[in-house]
Image (cartoon, rainbow, N blue to C red; front, side, top):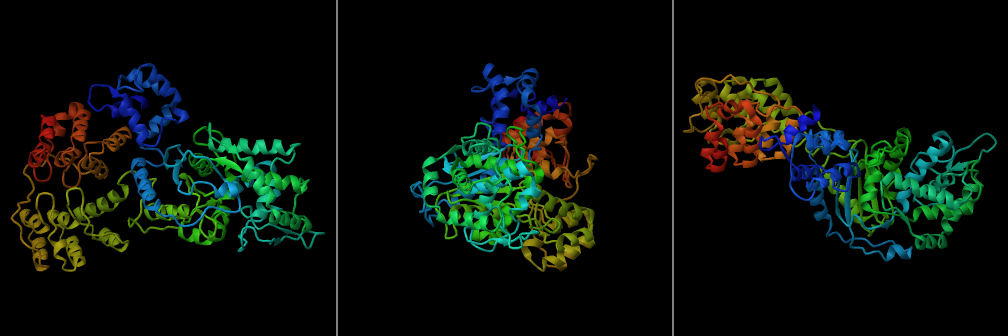
Length: 634
């Protein structure tokens, strides 16, 4: 039944077939890329019938067979249930941020390691992977680079997995140090018999990372065996088939210029910080340098971050790499100590867990949503990627990522990436106009207090003042007029047909409403905006705005998602307007064709539906001179 439902929603022509190329494009636009291993079986099946490289019109049986190995994932995608439902718009914003940040050439490559100094500083990439495995990359996302300190949270998680959080935290703290990441400082941690004992403040500074390495697979007999197991974890986090590597030359450079880290090691030995499993300082430090010399790509780093965002479960492979409780322990430490001396400002400005490394990568974990990786080698004065911090700041301006952002009621000013397309706009304008159409002054006042613009308009340029005047709600209209404060542009707002609030009130014989508007200085209009005789009895629906916004935009993908999720495509709004009205008004031929095809045996009623003024979709197409839309209705 579920497969038939999404098949029907994807049928754009009404002939009980689905275009293979449109289907593959739909998946890609929603973040499920061709190289997604979960889709391999589907791609093999489509390839066998020629539908991978050419367009094949799939029957229900062919479609069901093709998606059999990934039907749950496909159903979530087509029904708009993936973690970022409007992924195509999300990707467009990421692309815009990339273009804004790319000209930033501030900073310099890390100079103390020759291999890092020689990396092309112009390289730049942004990659995003969601907890459902949706992915988008732009820039040099497949270029390998050295992860450096980005390794630290993962080593800490390995230690927790091996020995448990309680054991680990007897030897590593969970507090910010307030000092430089490599400073010679420890925190007091006395134990009976060891009153002067001290331990590292947290696992994101060098001392804490060295301590975590001492607890990474300590029972293995050789350092090489321990190193291989660490790299295997990185593959599990980033894969499947992630290009995880190791740079021996970088390791040797780090090992040859490590006096400060040796000092930290000896200081920790002196202060009784190391755990019972610790055996040899030299082996611990050399393994630490090797782990810092791990190679990855920006795309793979975003997948690793998505695994953390997903509580340790790799969304691509389905493999559990870390326990969710252990990841929960790591994220607050990343938030307060993951960005070197910029960590406090990062928490204040960006507000999500992150870790940077001098190789130029910043990876960000948005819990239960996505992992973001940004890579560009030039570093700022603190040691973070200059473009990485810039890009994260720009993303934070557009998206609601900050864990501490609070929006009052409907006064959302940023995009919540987990909400469907236009959901924020629909919620604000839809609730506003519905309250006005019902004469609910209390709701209008609450919306005003939450910061909503009381004079916002919908897809037909109708405002709350139009609706209150049309329905004869004098109290609500007076409230709106009072808040217009004599603004002529608001009082005389013109809708799609040239109607104003005053023309609506006058045409529908609401003299008290007309008097309110005239007293405020509203101008008369010649447009007659009266109710049509013979109302067809269709009631407005709260689902209408999301359907009508999609139709007005001609967004076929969004209409398909709404259809697949069970939303009625033919509901009407407070003005009796339907999706077909809007698609015809705006000349959106694909949307018109789809809606007509989906109407089935309701076609006559759907095509003949009249709005508040007695107009059909055909009338709207004619008015707009959209001949192709008119032909589709014939």
